[in-house]
Image (cartoon, rainbow, N blue to C red; front, top):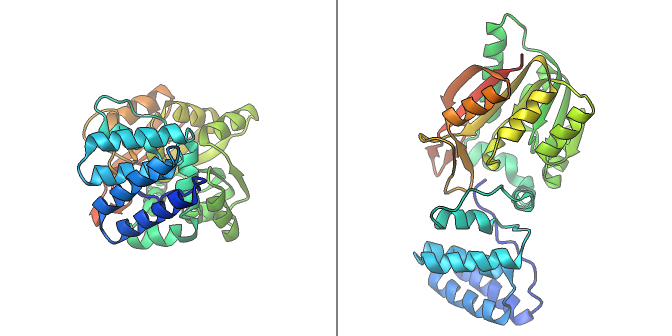
Amino acid sequence: MTKTSPLFVSSGDLIADRRYQWALDLVARGDLAGAADLLVQTTELAPDFAAAWFTLGDMRERLGDRDGAVTAFARAHDADPQDRQGAELRLVRLVAGKANPAMPESYIRHLFDQYAGRYDTTLTEHLRYRGPAILLDAVEQVMRSLGHRPSFDEVLDLGCGTGLAGAAFRPLAGRLVGVDLAPAMMTKANEKGLYDETRIAKIEDYLNAAAADDAHYDLVLAADVFVYICDLAPIFAGIANILAPGGMLAFTVETHAGDGVKLLPTLRFAHSENYLRRLLDASGLAIQHLAETSVRSEKGVPVDGLVIVAIAP
């Protein structure tokens, strides 16, 4: 997912709310300049109207007014400290030298909760998403190379969403656990009856709790999940703590030709191969399979990615 609908919370001023809605109508008709003018009027009426400031920032950026966009996104962030629309991420794209932030939990929840009803169709039909199939093939290749039948007693699906990866790996799992941050996505997953247990939680929090409970998994999956996490060091360390001896971590990421982590125009993080190798090695996980791939398309163009399977000692 790359774009959310504007998060509307009433400004408390009926006239401001109406002008905001009129501005959205102009956006839908392609009149960005007219929308920007209306949004300026809206923010004058309601100076703390975060949705109006955010949408104004979007209009100004699309119209080529970088400085104006920076001002508007900064005001949106100030008006909504939870940053439910990702104003800080937009600022990173506009302000040179600004460090990548952690993606706000409230932004991720809003992003996925609003798409839950059409998530599967959007990914598989419009974005040509094939992450679960790519992961399954990679895991089966590694298992065969080790002389084992592809079968796992305990499987953990991180960022399970609506259960697309869970459906692919259910036949290989004795027990399948799904973890996701967005309640609406988890509701869809539970409706499919794929998981033996589901938890609504932040990934790092779940991993820490699982380690404290001395839980162990034979396979941990993360299909198209790490694109929403900037710093993967604590995630890999947490996964290493709960993998059984010889247990596997299988995941996909978007990548780039440089080093480190890059925030893409889609507001998703791309992790370089060298970065991933360093972090996996530091966590004591040995790479058994690494291949270039594309798990989805963006505007009809395949997105550069990697599929990796690593094993615990």
